[in-house]
Picture 1: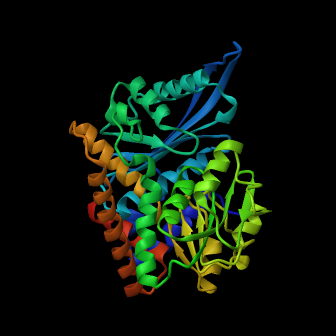
Picture 2 (picture 1 turned 90 degrees about the vertical axis):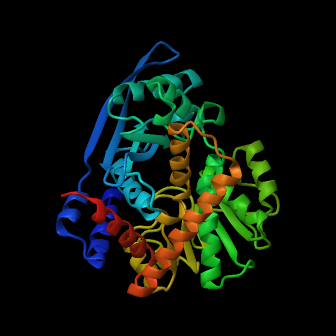
Picture 3 (picture 1 turned 90 degrees about the horizontal axis):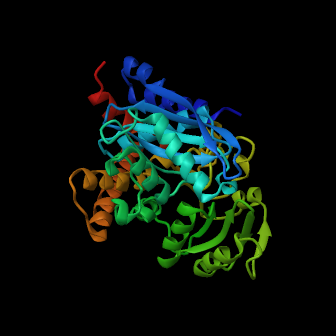
Length: 401
């Protein structure tokens, strides 16, 4: 299997041909502007010194300051961070916000660290990147296993609330940021339902029940959609009659997992991906649908809320099966869009109402979907390539080479 970064570069190559991209622009986008690897020594609560490896990739700032999350995850490596920073470059351009692409991370299992150790790690990461990140240079945000509290710690360490987004409200965060990724995805989902003539009786399967997946499930459930299966890191549950998401959320909060929820069947994550459904929402990690399992996917629509969950090889298989893929660079762009709103509010010393945030988010997500839908129809290409073409043409128009 190709790495995440190889997958990203394959997507770039294909889209550049369709977009007839200037060859110098393509060459520039085939490498990140800068990548940094740092060692972060931390004195643990036990007194032992441990050294963690951190990364920051600044991919391209043609459209504006680098923007992208920081993840604390045991599988984090430079290849993954490079891929994610490239996708952020495309994502910001897809929704037309004046930010470029970046990403960062620390190779660590945060679940085994105490609160004081996480704070030391967070401050240590920022100390190593001072002068490299900042409100006009590179503006990080939360990602996998990082939180608003961690962003507040990092902003405090650098001494500027506008240097980080995704912070708690009391630390300069934006109303609506906590649900922005899922709500932005829902706005795209609404437009897809309208354009593709799907009904509220559609059966939906959700892989991943963390921040994005659980909130997305809750929004869909409250809107009257039927969710027949969900999964988390410990397993998956399915009920043909549909799940009461409110009760599933309470159950997970009490037990730590969705498995063994009443009146459901426990299945594996792989079985969940291959369920017969109308919509398969991928809200976990990258490389979930590959050439090894794509032929077994039975959904009519694959909806990417995670970053890079479908490989390029799987994309081809799904296309041959006439399964529509709504790509991550559009569907999960709500998070970075509201991060942009937070950044603007911090810089201008403003505080927007929740209604104002969500109204602006809806306008951007609706407009972006319509643009990509029109490109897909005009050029007779899939939605991923249409999204990339839209993004690349914006970058090409502004890039100075």
